[in-house]
Length: 254
Ligand code: MG
Image 1: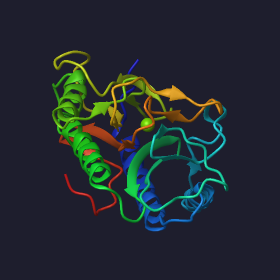
Image 2: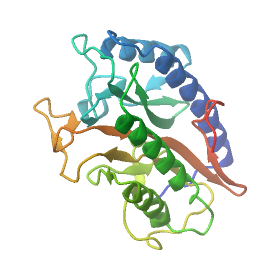
Image 3: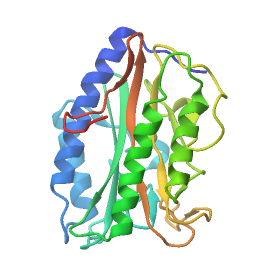
Protein backbone atom coordinates (compact mmCIF):
# COMPACT_ATOMS: atom_id res chain seq x y z
CA UNK A 1 0.00 0.00 0.00
CA UNK A 2 1.40 3.39 -0.99
CA UNK A 3 1.11 5.95 1.81
CA UNK A 4 0.73 9.51 0.52
CA UNK A 5 2.40 12.26 2.54
CA UNK A 6 0.58 15.35 3.76
CA UNK A 7 1.99 18.83 3.07
CA UNK A 8 3.12 19.00 6.72
CA UNK A 9 4.96 15.69 6.37
CA UNK A 10 6.53 16.80 3.10
CA UNK A 11 7.81 19.91 4.81
CA UNK A 12 9.47 17.79 7.53
CA UNK A 13 10.99 15.52 4.89
CA UNK A 14 12.42 18.58 3.15
CA UNK A 15 14.05 19.74 6.39
CA UNK A 16 15.37 16.23 7.03
CA UNK A 17 16.66 15.96 3.49
CA UNK A 18 18.59 19.20 3.75
CA UNK A 19 20.16 18.01 7.00
CA UNK A 20 21.08 14.64 5.54
CA UNK A 21 22.57 16.20 2.40
CA UNK A 22 24.75 18.44 4.53
CA UNK A 23 25.90 15.49 6.63
CA UNK A 24 26.75 13.34 3.61
CA UNK A 25 28.59 16.23 2.03
CA UNK A 26 30.64 16.66 5.23
CA UNK A 27 31.50 12.95 5.16
CA UNK A 28 32.58 13.14 1.53
CA UNK A 29 34.96 15.98 2.33
CA UNK A 30 36.79 13.67 4.72
CA UNK A 31 37.39 10.95 2.14
CA UNK A 32 41.11 10.25 1.75
CA UNK A 33 43.43 7.26 1.63
CA UNK A 34 44.12 5.71 5.03
CA UNK A 35 40.80 6.57 6.67
CA UNK A 36 38.84 3.63 8.03
CA UNK A 37 35.21 3.10 7.09
CA UNK A 38 34.43 3.17 10.82
CA UNK A 39 35.68 6.78 10.92
CA UNK A 40 32.86 7.75 8.55
CA UNK A 41 30.29 5.75 10.47
CA UNK A 42 31.12 7.41 13.79
CA UNK A 43 31.15 10.84 12.19
CA UNK A 44 27.82 10.16 10.49
CA UNK A 45 26.14 9.02 13.68
CA UNK A 46 27.30 12.00 15.71
CA UNK A 47 26.27 14.49 13.00
CA UNK A 48 22.83 12.87 12.68
CA UNK A 49 22.28 12.97 16.44
CA UNK A 50 23.53 16.57 16.66
CA UNK A 51 20.91 17.44 14.04
CA UNK A 52 18.20 15.95 16.24
CA UNK A 53 17.82 12.80 14.18
CA UNK A 54 18.37 9.09 14.61
CA UNK A 55 20.22 6.88 12.09
CA UNK A 56 17.62 5.05 9.99
CA UNK A 57 19.75 2.01 9.28
CA UNK A 58 21.14 1.25 12.75
CA UNK A 59 19.17 -1.69 14.09
CA UNK A 60 17.13 -2.03 10.89
CA UNK A 61 16.74 -5.80 10.47
CA UNK A 62 19.71 -6.01 12.85
CA UNK A 63 22.06 -3.85 10.73
CA UNK A 64 24.82 -2.74 13.14
CA UNK A 65 25.84 0.68 11.80
CA UNK A 66 24.74 4.15 10.68
CA UNK A 67 26.05 4.01 7.11
CA UNK A 68 26.62 1.40 4.44
CA UNK A 69 30.29 1.75 3.54
CA UNK A 70 30.90 -0.13 0.30
CA UNK A 71 34.24 -0.07 -1.53
CA UNK A 72 34.91 -1.04 -5.18
CA UNK A 73 33.26 -4.45 -5.83
CA UNK A 74 31.04 -3.98 -2.78
CA UNK A 75 27.66 -2.85 -4.09
CA UNK A 76 25.81 -1.99 -0.89
CA UNK A 77 25.44 -2.90 2.81
CA UNK A 78 29.18 -2.88 3.51
CA UNK A 79 29.59 -2.82 7.30
CA UNK A 80 31.95 -0.10 8.58
CA UNK A 81 35.06 -1.40 10.29
CA UNK A 82 38.19 0.03 11.92
CA UNK A 83 40.19 -2.47 9.89
CA UNK A 84 38.86 -1.49 6.50
CA UNK A 85 40.86 1.47 5.20
CA UNK A 86 40.34 3.50 2.05
CA UNK A 87 43.10 3.25 -0.53
CA UNK A 88 44.15 5.53 -3.36
CA UNK A 89 42.12 4.66 -6.46
CA UNK A 90 39.12 3.18 -4.61
CA UNK A 91 35.54 4.15 -5.27
CA UNK A 92 33.70 4.52 -1.99
CA UNK A 93 29.92 4.35 -1.74
CA UNK A 94 28.20 5.80 1.31
CA UNK A 95 24.50 5.09 1.85
CA UNK A 96 22.91 6.94 4.76
CA UNK A 97 19.46 7.59 6.22
CA UNK A 98 18.02 9.53 9.10
CA UNK A 99 14.67 9.73 10.83
CA UNK A 100 13.52 12.90 12.56
CA UNK A 101 10.01 13.86 13.65
CA UNK A 102 8.92 10.39 12.58
CA UNK A 103 9.95 10.64 8.94
CA UNK A 104 12.85 9.01 7.13
CA UNK A 105 15.03 10.29 4.31
CA UNK A 106 17.61 8.17 2.51
CA UNK A 107 20.46 8.97 0.11
CA UNK A 108 23.69 7.58 -1.27
CA UNK A 109 26.66 8.70 -3.28
CA UNK A 110 29.92 7.28 -4.57
CA UNK A 111 33.15 9.24 -4.29
CA UNK A 112 36.65 8.79 -5.62
CA UNK A 113 39.49 8.16 -3.18
CA UNK A 114 42.36 10.20 -4.60
CA UNK A 115 43.03 9.52 -8.29
CA UNK A 116 40.81 6.89 -9.90
CA UNK A 117 41.11 5.33 -13.34
CA UNK A 118 39.03 6.38 -16.36
CA UNK A 119 36.61 3.48 -16.24
CA UNK A 120 35.84 4.11 -12.58
CA UNK A 121 35.25 7.78 -13.31
CA UNK A 122 32.99 6.91 -16.22
CA UNK A 123 30.96 4.54 -14.04
CA UNK A 124 30.53 7.23 -11.43
CA UNK A 125 29.37 9.71 -14.09
CA UNK A 126 26.94 7.21 -15.61
CA UNK A 127 25.63 6.14 -12.22
CA UNK A 128 24.91 9.68 -11.09
CA UNK A 129 23.43 10.68 -14.44
CA UNK A 130 21.18 7.59 -14.43
CA UNK A 131 19.71 8.68 -11.10
CA UNK A 132 18.80 12.03 -12.64
CA UNK A 133 17.33 10.30 -15.70
CA UNK A 134 15.03 8.50 -13.27
CA UNK A 135 14.23 11.64 -11.29
CA UNK A 136 13.17 13.40 -14.50
CA UNK A 137 10.38 10.83 -14.86
CA UNK A 138 8.86 11.70 -11.46
CA UNK A 139 5.89 13.59 -12.87
CA UNK A 140 2.19 13.51 -12.08
CA UNK A 141 0.52 10.95 -14.34
CA UNK A 142 3.66 9.05 -15.34
CA UNK A 143 3.82 5.37 -14.44
CA UNK A 144 6.21 3.96 -11.88
CA UNK A 145 8.16 1.93 -14.43
CA UNK A 146 8.87 5.05 -16.47
CA UNK A 147 11.46 5.76 -13.76
CA UNK A 148 12.85 2.20 -13.95
CA UNK A 149 13.08 2.30 -17.72
CA UNK A 150 14.80 5.68 -17.85
CA UNK A 151 17.51 4.46 -15.48
CA UNK A 152 17.99 1.02 -17.01
CA UNK A 153 18.07 2.13 -20.62
CA UNK A 154 20.52 4.92 -19.88
CA UNK A 155 22.89 2.58 -18.07
CA UNK A 156 22.63 -0.07 -20.75
CA UNK A 157 23.36 2.43 -23.53
CA UNK A 158 26.42 3.53 -21.60
CA UNK A 159 27.69 -0.06 -21.57
CA UNK A 160 27.18 -0.88 -17.90
CA UNK A 161 24.69 -3.03 -15.99
CA UNK A 162 22.16 -2.23 -13.30
CA UNK A 163 21.95 -4.35 -10.18
CA UNK A 164 18.57 -6.10 -10.39
CA UNK A 165 18.48 -7.72 -6.97
CA UNK A 166 18.11 -4.43 -5.05
CA UNK A 167 15.59 -1.71 -5.77
CA UNK A 168 14.47 1.77 -4.80
CA UNK A 169 11.45 2.19 -2.57
CA UNK A 170 8.77 4.39 -1.13
CA UNK A 171 9.82 6.14 2.07
CA UNK A 172 8.16 8.04 4.93
CA UNK A 173 7.19 6.80 8.37
CA UNK A 174 8.99 3.61 7.38
CA UNK A 175 12.41 3.47 5.76
CA UNK A 176 11.14 1.04 3.14
CA UNK A 177 7.57 1.52 1.99
CA UNK A 178 5.70 0.58 -1.17
CA UNK A 179 6.24 0.83 -4.05
CA UNK A 180 9.40 -1.01 -5.01
CA UNK A 181 11.29 0.78 -7.78
CA UNK A 182 13.46 -1.51 -9.93
CA UNK A 183 16.22 0.11 -11.96
CA UNK A 184 15.27 -1.64 -15.21
CA UNK A 185 12.31 -2.77 -17.27
CA UNK A 186 9.87 -1.51 -19.89
CA UNK A 187 8.11 1.85 -19.44
CA UNK A 188 4.39 2.36 -18.95
CA UNK A 189 3.73 -0.10 -16.14
CA UNK A 190 2.87 0.15 -12.47
CA UNK A 191 0.96 2.77 -10.53
CA UNK A 192 0.46 6.28 -11.79
CA UNK A 193 2.57 8.82 -9.92
CA UNK A 194 0.55 11.26 -7.86
CA UNK A 195 1.11 14.09 -5.42
CA UNK A 196 2.15 13.00 -1.95
CA UNK A 197 4.30 10.09 -3.09
CA UNK A 198 7.79 9.97 -1.57
CA UNK A 199 10.30 7.81 -3.42
CA UNK A 200 13.89 6.81 -2.74
CA UNK A 201 15.37 6.17 -6.19
CA UNK A 202 18.70 4.38 -6.06
CA UNK A 203 20.44 2.94 -9.09
CA UNK A 204 23.36 0.62 -8.37
CA UNK A 205 25.56 0.22 -11.42
CA UNK A 206 28.13 -2.46 -12.10
CA UNK A 207 30.62 -3.46 -14.70
CA UNK A 208 29.50 -7.07 -15.21
CA UNK A 209 26.23 -8.83 -15.93
CA UNK A 210 26.66 -11.53 -13.27
CA UNK A 211 24.33 -11.81 -10.28
CA UNK A 212 25.52 -10.19 -7.07
CA UNK A 213 26.48 -12.27 -4.03
CA UNK A 214 26.15 -11.72 -0.29
CA UNK A 215 29.30 -12.25 1.73
CA UNK A 216 29.70 -14.36 4.86
CA UNK A 217 28.86 -11.39 7.12
CA UNK A 218 25.29 -11.79 5.73
CA UNK A 219 25.22 -8.12 4.73
CA UNK A 220 27.90 -7.04 2.27
CA UNK A 221 26.71 -7.39 -1.33
CA UNK A 222 29.45 -7.80 -3.93
CA UNK A 223 29.48 -7.97 -7.72
CA UNK A 224 29.62 -11.44 -9.28
CA UNK A 225 32.94 -10.82 -11.05
CA UNK A 226 34.62 -8.72 -8.38
CA UNK A 227 34.38 -5.73 -10.75
CA UNK A 228 33.48 -2.22 -9.72
CA UNK A 229 30.10 -0.94 -8.60
CA UNK A 230 28.70 2.52 -7.83
CA UNK A 231 25.52 3.69 -6.06
CA UNK A 232 23.61 6.97 -6.14
CA UNK A 233 20.35 7.76 -4.35
CA UNK A 234 18.03 10.65 -3.62
CA UNK A 235 14.72 10.93 -1.80
CA UNK A 236 12.12 12.69 -3.97
CA UNK A 237 8.65 13.92 -3.05
CA UNK A 238 6.03 14.52 -5.73
CA UNK A 239 3.95 17.63 -5.02
CA UNK A 240 1.18 19.36 -6.97
CA UNK A 241 3.95 21.57 -8.35
CA UNK A 242 6.17 18.71 -9.44
CA UNK A 243 9.05 16.67 -8.05
CA UNK A 244 11.12 17.99 -5.17
CA UNK A 245 14.47 16.32 -4.53
CA UNK A 246 14.56 16.69 -0.76
CA UNK A 247 18.09 15.35 -0.27
CA UNK A 248 19.83 18.17 -2.12
CA UNK A 249 22.43 20.15 -0.28
CA UNK A 250 22.67 22.99 -2.75
CA UNK A 251 25.78 22.03 -4.71
CA UNK A 252 24.15 19.40 -6.92
CA UNK A 253 22.36 20.28 -10.14
CA UNK A 254 19.60 18.58 -12.08
MG1 MG B 1 17.35 3.37 -0.04
